[in-house]
Amino acid sequence: MTLWKLEPFFADERINISWQGGRRAELKDGYAILRVAPFGQEIVVSTDDADLQKQLAGWANGLIALAANAELNRMHG
Image 1 (cartoon, rainbow, N blue to C red):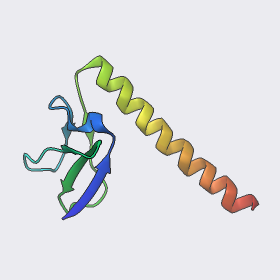
Image 2 (cartoon, rainbow, N blue to C red; image 1 turned 90 degrees about the vertical axis):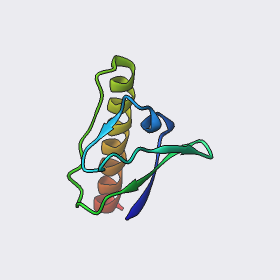
Image 3 (cartoon, helix red, strand yellow; image 1 turned 120 degrees about the vertical axis):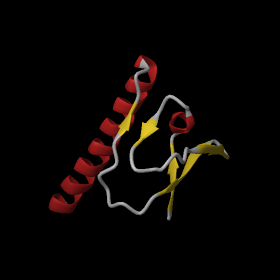
Image 4 (cartoon, helix red, strand yellow; image 1 turned 45 degrees about the vertical axis):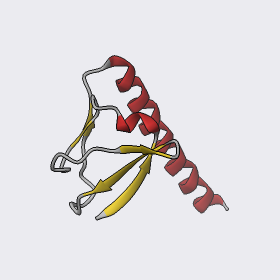
């Protein structure tokens, strides 16, 4: 088991995270804490709620931008 420290909206019951066997993230100290099942990195996060979809998209775009910036820094610096 691994602990993930996520944005608070991940604790919303309308967020679905694959491969978790019914486990849900719990709010603690301003974060959603999730005990992640040991199944590689192919986890899918989804919701039918439009506001949560926007938050998920913003979170994913932020991770992509962070990774892109790290790669640019590695290549140039």
